Structures are given as C-alpha cells and as structure tokens.
Image (cartoon, rainbow over all chains, first blue to last red; front, side, top):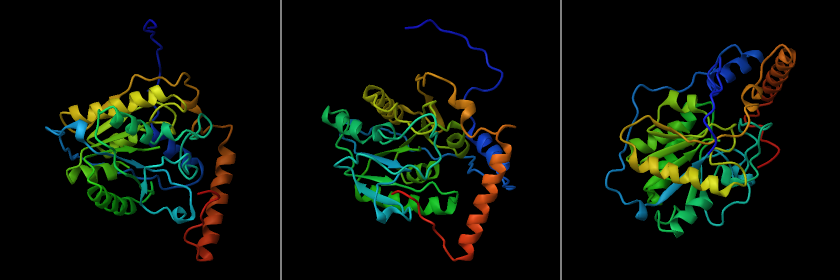
Length: 165
Length: 127
C-alpha cells in the first residue's frame, strides 16, 4: 500500500464529457449544443430479498457484433455463448488515442459473469446479451429500451448490467 | 444507455450502469452507477487485466444488492496510471482550432450531399 499523496488541482479532475463535447462541437462549427437527457426523479427497484446465487444477470452494451445485419445499428439480442472474440466499437466516441477495445472483457463482462456463475456467486447468466445504439436521438433510445425490456422478460433476466463504452 | 437503465428499472428490473462518463450518466439520473475513472473505452477494467475485470463485476453486483436508494454512484478505487488522457481527449485549443473548423465544414458538406442523394445511412467501414 503506497502512502496517500495529495496532488492539488485547479480544476475538477474528473472529466466532464458534457463540457468537452459541447466545446469540441462548437469548435467544429455546430451552433446548437447537444441537450443531454436529464430527469428530476430516478426510478429505483430495490434488490429486496432476491437471492443473488439464483439470479440471472444480463448485460446491455452499446457495441455491436460484427456482421452485415448490424450495419443499420438495430437494437439486438445476441447469443452470449460463445463469447464474441471482438466487437465493433469504432462508430462510438471513446478515447482511441489512450486505449483500445481489443479485449472484449474490458467492456463486455460476459466471461466474468460465467466465472461468477461457475463459483455459485450468481445463477447462470442470461443466454443472450443485448445491444442498444447510443444515438443522439432520445426517441430512438426509448424504442431500443422497449425492445430490450421485452427480450429481458423473454430471457427471465433478474438484473441488468449496462455498460456504456 | 442511462435511458435504457431507467426503462428497465421502471419495469421492476434492478440495474447497474458501469461507465466512465460520470457526468452524462448522473445528469440523466440512474439508480446505480459504477464509475470507473478511466479514458472512455474500458469501463469494465483495463484490457488484459482479468483480475481487475473481475473486481469491477463483483463491485457492480455488490452495488446491485446493497443500494438503499436511487442515484447511488460508487467510484471504484482504480487508477489508470497517468492523467495525460484527460486534457488530450477532444482537445480544443489554439493549436487545432482551424483543423476542427475545417473538419466540421467537410462533415456538414458530406452530410448535405448524402441528404441530397437520399441516403439516410451511410454505413461504415467495419461491422
């Protein structure tokens, strides 16, 4: 354990992507800043007395399997076994200079959920994982959300991990 | 992604959002967030680091089962190892303003041409 070290800052250290993207697109000459979804109230479903060791966990990603059928970026449900060796990520905004997405485990926790199920921490994970397009259209995302809920019910998913790349 | 989480939560399915853009997720408002303060791309742990990826998933399950109310963000005690990416990502400065303006103009021209031709989705190189 290293000793705690104070590194004083003049600005907040955590990046604000709302600020960054607004300034970036303004510099690109777009005059209307994107308006991010923002709600006063937040739905909350407590875990309650559910049993994690029996729970079926699902995963939602913004990345896409490779294949022509995904070119139009539909919402999708896709077999979680075998775990895809790679996913299509280049359409998304992520830090392509600082890192890479060659290891799907760094953004799609399917292998680790299998492992945790093997150890009895959770039940078997959902046989499918789900994908939604991160459109700059909140209406489109709402449509994707309805489809994903229907698939989650079909697959009897008890809880969902949603990973934003 | 936060909107999907909210929709599932409203329907009675508990959720955890795992992400690195804390402000976007919290501005929308979700029940539970695992915040990994990394450059965008690896919110489930560094590439190749299976122990760390396991830690992130375990902490997500812990937040899933223990959150006492909405808007609970747990910032994991993980460090990328360098802060260089923070100012570099989507950098805007005197050194690249002209390039950004030109790139924006080129993009608008190509979008206008596509609209003219009736193309609604231009597809991409991969996928």
